[in-house]
Image (cartoon, rainbow, N blue to C red; front, side):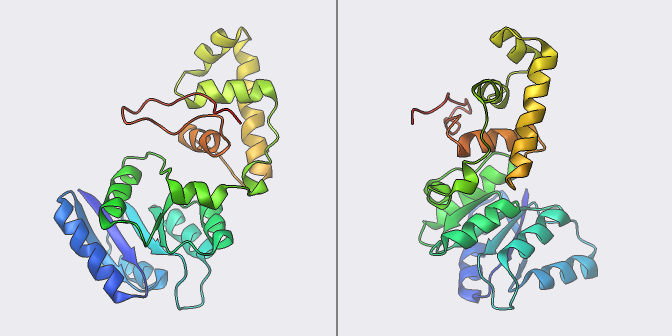
Length: 226
């Protein structure tokens, strides 16, 4: 059962999402409130574990920023989905850079929101039209300046191959492949897009067009033509 928290300062939105989660059957809403501070206080008072997924409004009425809200929730141990009208692309990008797992527009069908919760709860990247719109044309998402070899190593490694298999496929030493991945991670950190895990690297590769999003069967495609 996926434990979900809803944070939005519009009660009608929360009530609609709560009803949708209940209908799905494998999602249960453990918290519904208007601010991250309320959620953190509830966690402390109830001694409950962090929600698996927090559905968070982009802009709350308490003066907090989306970056601080996302960082606080991610640090607390939850994955975060931004639920927004997505009319402020800069704020959306801030949320993604702060660690949000993805974004779902408030104009989307309610089933798309519950499907996104399922996707994120499985640890899979959430790549959709809203995500693409948020990063399209933003140089912060295309400025890691990876070399051709680094892109090759990242493409194979992020697609699921062990690093030794990547080295064999490219005809280089294991130490060389390992050094390339290390440089890739450093470059992403330098542009504010850290990728400490293999899943994070896959997300960065998808964002930068090095990989296509996972297919329905879970397989990951190759580099898109530019």
